[in-house]
Length: 502
Image (cartoon, rainbow, N blue to C red; front, side, top):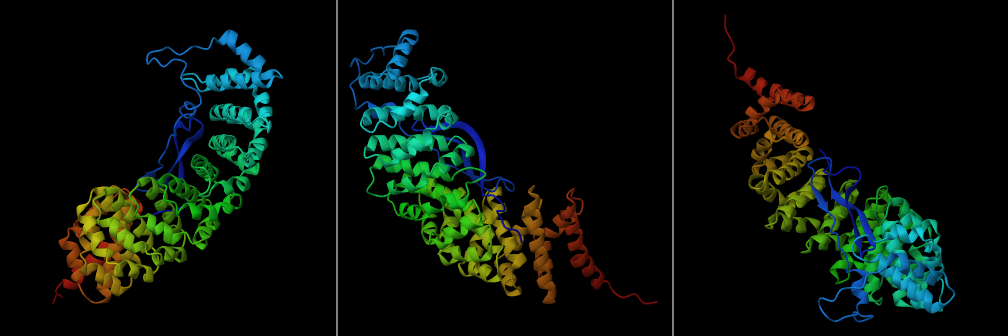
């Protein structure tokens, strides 16, 4: 028997650097699934929030209401010096005016001018502005500038010592300042796993978690949830004890009616469940499984994708943890997924069932009792090739690990033909799994002193396909084919020969 998923469940796939609110970056997008076997992955939904400037349109009307009016250009040579002088001055109004100009420069289309801003030497000044509690408008604009810089050069923000100050701003009474500070921290954390660890080490989690509740301003709650996901993301994962305090908060978020919120919460949980065995066990002990099973039936892939990743992480470990999914009603949901007119749902359901049928005989019986075998056989005979492989793998695990009575039931449900049909596929692991399943069926038939199984395999052209596999380039498949033919067909021919008389 083979579990469908092994090792790390969250792989890092290089994609173009995207920004959350032109700031909170998902440069490496996690793909949850099995990359080393059939190659199917469940892609991470990437949301790109509205830009900074869209929110600020409420602050001031445009300089001209004419639709074709040209925007004034920033004269780099003259204005930049004026901007620098304003930031470095001791006049609060000049500081604010110049900081706004820097923010607009960084948010302009095309070249964000990040490097020129850094080279101007004003970054320490913006960080100093973050501490001006008596001037929240300046704090807010400075935090916006820092966020833009962090989206392109997060290491600059770290090296200038901004993280502890940004963390302190998570206690700000000003919603705009608070929101922008969370934004900046999430942006830094999204830059790399090293940056993520710097943010975690700055003590961000304790002051962040109180803002993840239903009474929080909606925009703050959304950014805080996405930031939490960034803090949990990446390979290697963060140390589990650093993110474990977020579990109760995530459990509350999974009860939300807001799809975006509990999608981000599910992704955070998915990353945590991938971090270690302790992570998976803690997810189970915290009581997440029943809710996760419910969410398998959600209509949005943005929710279902990470949920399936979590469940597969659970199933890839041990039989005790698999039982939590069964007890949580997972088989009923899987049956529904198999009968949906959605190829992705069918394939993912088969992958999950494969891990269950790799478990104990009692767990295989649970699959039988849920009437999943006839559905799997139908999928294995009618679906596209890649889905057939998943369904056959689930069936072959059941035959390899099932009791004699269970295997007799599987044969009665016509599982032999799909096992034989898949022997011509190119996936070596699926072919080997199918051979193992057929071998177990033949063994049970021999123990019952019945030749029905051999005949059924021959009728399904299985014997012919196994004979061809004797010449397979893969040594393990070739040896298995030779072993099966020698034991169950050559011996049969010997038994059928008439004794000769002299």
